[in-house]
Amino acid sequence: AQKITQTQPGMFVQEKEAVTLDCTYDTSDQSYGLFWYKQPSSGEMIFLIYQGSYDEQNATEGRYSLNFQKARKSANLVISASQLGDSAMYFCAMRLIGNQFYFGTGTSLTVIP
Amino acid sequence: EAGVAQSPRYKIIEKRQSVAFWCNPISGHATLYWYQQILGQGPKLLIQFQNNGVVDDSQLPKDRFSAERLKGVDSTLKIQPAKLEDSAVYLCASSLGAGGLADTQYFGPGTRLTVL
Image (cartoon, rainbow over all chains, first blue to last red; front, side):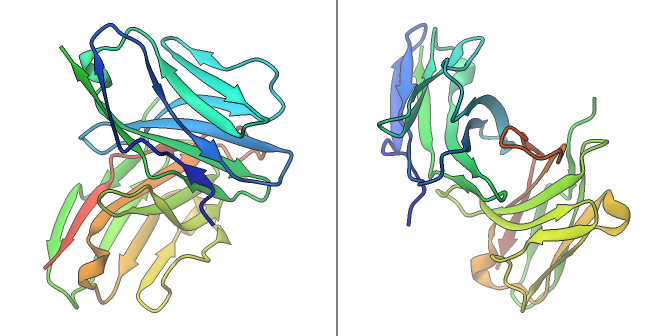
């Protein structure tokens, strides 16, 4: 069963605009962690942001914020003021107790000048 | 602080040949992971080490893949013999391994394997 679902294979955004990348997850566990990674064409996975299931506030890291809606089991990534360097694949991932770690299939983001 | 190092960056081999990849994790990181990422997909965990012990190798095709982490530091992943479907990027990651859900994995640049 798919644990992480990213329904947007590709997204386009105008430079300096904000963009939301969708992620939904499936688990019956109460404790879990959610991550977003960026993968540029160079191939390296870059950690962006983390949200714990018990965190009451949405995580933020610079231009990245995580819109965490626990009841809907969604953990969308919001990138504000998009830059050309933001063009990359973005992966949502989840860690469960017991160290299982699941990645989604990714969303390709293209920033248009 | 140096990141996760991997070599080689690229490798082209013919099917039925063997190949080995090397990974050096971030200093002090107890947990090391090997992932396989096929084009157009998310990474799939092959094996996870905690120090020099295996935590999870449930998705490692053990008839052809092997991995070791001697002395609990660097690690090698081997494929013998390779098949066409092994063409992928092999990513190594490490984390502090202190436990907890927020134990963030940091990735190396990956090795792109092409099997002809």
